[in-house]
Image: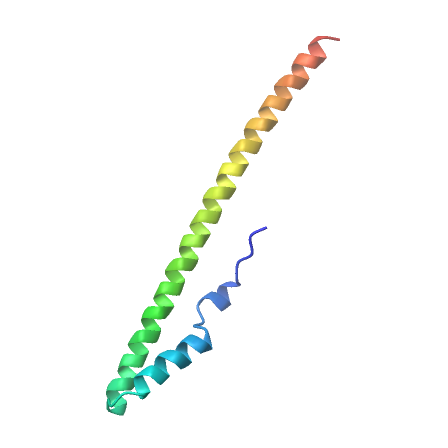
Length: 90
């Protein structure tokens, strides 16, 4: 069974990504204002990528479920037809 994170969890950037990104910028010789700005840009971009990936996973799951529902509907119709045929033999 597929397991997806809660909606609230999806839009929170994991703290380890934020820590790595900010530490990389702070390790350089940039001034504080520009490093904070660049860190924010990096974190914002990472958040957007995570959102895009989550939405793609949701679309793939929806497509898989739709296919399964269609197959089950076809199977149900076939079973009803088989049942009518069997009742006709009585």
